[in-house]
Picture 1: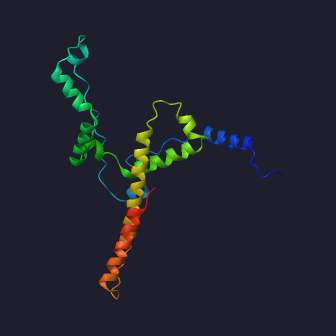
Picture 2: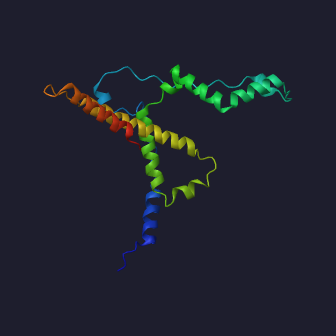
Picture 3: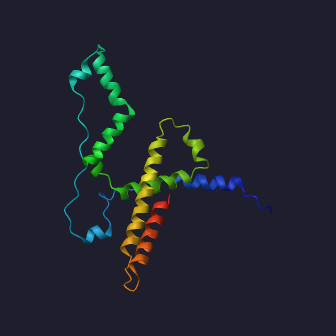
Length: 188
C-alpha cells in the first residue's frame, strides 16, 4: 500500500463536509449563555435603526448639474483621508453602530468563517471567482478577532498575576515587563 493519500477519498470527505452547512453563529444578544440566564439583567438594547432613505427630491431629479464646488466636495468626501477621518470620528464619539457590535460576536463569526473556508479544497481558488468577496474586510475582521483574543488572554494573565511580597520591586517590575513584552510581540 502506498503512503500517498487517496485524493478521491479526500475529495469525498470534503464534499460530505460541504454538504452539511452550518449557519453562522448567532450574536450573543440573541442567544443568551448560561451565565446571562442566571443573572437578572435589563434586556439588551436593540440594534440601531438603519440610515434614513434618500429624499424624494434627490431620487426624482433626472438631470444632473455639475457644480464645481459640489464636485470638489464629493471628491474630498470620497477620498481615503475623509473616510479615515469619519471612521475615527465615529470611534471617538462611540457611535451607536459601533457600540452595537460585540467583539465576542465578531470572534465567533471569524471562527465560523474559518471553519467553513477550511472545508474548501483550495479556498483562494474558489474565492477568486466571487468578485464581490470583501477580502480586505474579511482580513480586517480576522485581525480584529485575533487582537480581541490576544487581549482576552492578556486580561486572564494579568488578573491571575499575584504579587510576591518576598520579591524585590525590581524583580516584580521585570516580570510585569516580560509579560507585557510577550503579549505585545505575539501576532496571529
